[in-house]
Image (cartoon, rainbow, N blue to C red; front, side):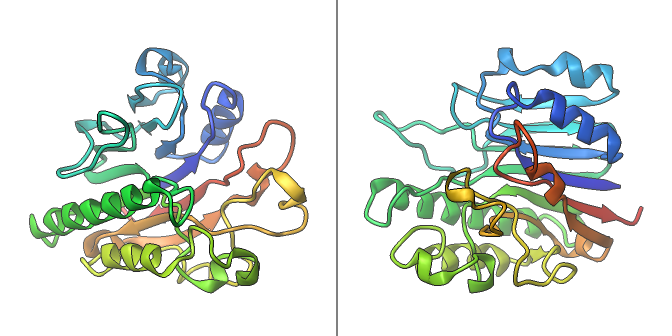
Length: 263
């Protein structure tokens, strides 16, 4: 089975690129983030015509997550237990979506950005990751043999080598100790980053800002991850980041991350 995750930064703006890549790379399950549309606006019929089932959760022109699968799509779940909300009044955002695909429990996750270390959005981000940690622990407790993967844009660069220059990030989000600790806390429940052992850094990134020629200068960040439970980790055969998809007109600022599993 081939799993992938991709923050597409608007599915409607990048539909042709996404569907072409999906077919060309023989993807079985694709977790999408930042679809930027409501459910009724998601181009479900285009994926259906290619033989995929679709589950989408979108509430507005912001955020939005989806799972696209050609190996089944069962037991869809919007949000996870304890997931905090944002806004006034506070309400859950479209940032988490789960489904069982080909016997694997897949979550498409879009972690809040945090905006600034002193912004209330940072506290929201940390609360969100804390609730995810608790949910992740409970999922693994359901059974050690349960194959489960947490895929998505985590908006955290957990190690110094996950950014091109730590000096450039001093006092900013994504690399702070509290964010890194929150990411590590999810790993500590029993999940594993299954990409890093197969693509050691430095210089391995999944995101390059549109500004200041970050991509051609190789100034990226590694913030998109596939975390797998123990049972699924044992099945991982290979992993890759498709840097080519960050190139050209109309590209997302993120590249797809792909993991191949033994059946």
